[in-house]
Length: 191
Image (cartoon, rainbow, N blue to C red; front, side, top):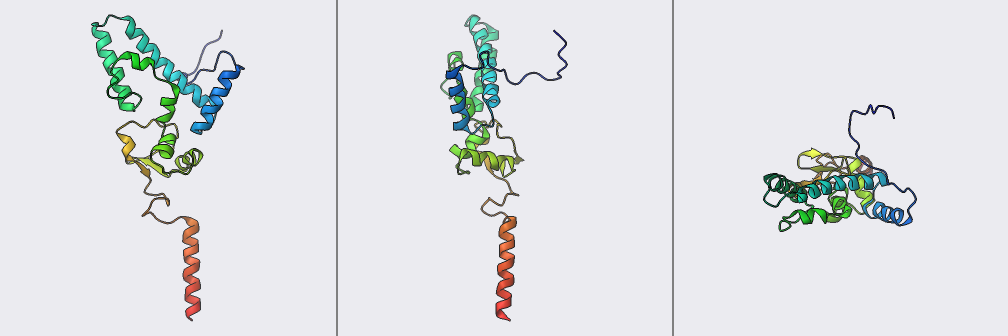
């Protein structure tokens, strides 16, 4: 085995069995429902979830009153609550083990723009809006559909100031051209 010269860690893990029918169907359904580009986006969420669950499992092996379990467990639960993956009342490590991929995919910016905020006509339209820089979160323009929206910034997702899709923004290129043509056409009729 040769050396691994990568200067960053892996973000996804391919499945062990490449042609398992149930898994393929499940992944294809997730790709369709959440408008993902490819299955690697599903695998990335599964990998993140696996890392979080492994930390929770290791903490659960410790004693209930262990200071490491109390401190790190509370930090993990508060972080997941801030991200919107856990509810406020879900405050034990058992709930962390109950997380699934759908909860992660539901917190993506692409899903929030379509389902929660209704800024797009479809899940695929929301991906296009984000990639074409029409969406901002707070003051920052975000063009990454997989951006994880936390609970606080969910209220701040809206059209960008530069986007012609906003209600009081500058009209787009085609509309400006039509307005100019209508203005010129109106001037010629008067003369």
